[in-house]
Length: 286
Image 1 (cartoon, rainbow, N blue to C red):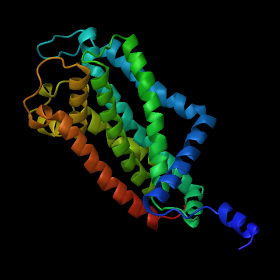
Image 2: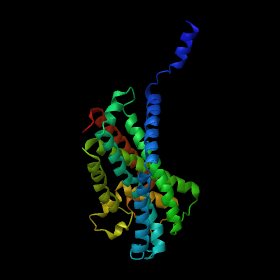
Image 3: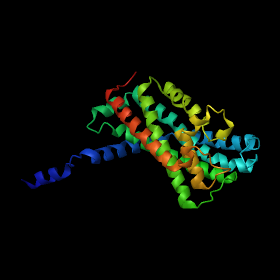
Image 4: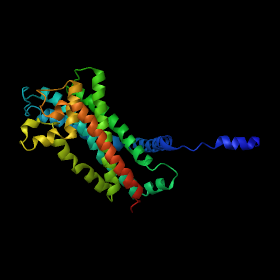
């Protein structure tokens, strides 16, 4: 073979297969979505405003009125109780953005163009969810600084606190796959935003995030205790050292860290499979 032939052969990259191909393609899609977020800073700014408003409103408007068992009612006590719930709500509400983003790509025909390229089918969704995870991480960082400003503190050290934030990001990433499925299933970004939010309100409020479950009707308490959202909130309170009052005797609350990890992994496995399956049969919508 000639020297030119060697040069051409060296210039042609080796074809990637399996996990290596998926990792490469996912990284390319994630970079594309992150670049888009930096070019449209309103996406990040408005994503930050909502959780910050929740912190301020719950802390200063309702904090002195909500009674925590064996701890009383004060804004200082409630701030410690509240923040794990606000953090968890923030990572799950990012689902609406994931739904709208994927629905927008569908309506513009971008997904059809991706499908025509020699790339791993799941990479489009993996890249999108990873980009959303990066945005959620930044939002959590800013929200934690706001929480410190209003009096929230960690009491079990930085390593355990980082474990708590890791659980939150795992929950958010798992739920982003629900958002991906919604975005692939509806006909417009507006519908995706509504569909991505409407089920989150009962999920987050029928939980231990904002009020003690013991204050709910008896028939509703088991639902709240077995809510995977409640398990993550309780796990974070344990890791942050923010447990106010006694821990509920319900089994998921006594084993909150394990329940949080397992439930997030189950949600991620189920909805990633459903999303990739839906993506393979989906087509752009005008």
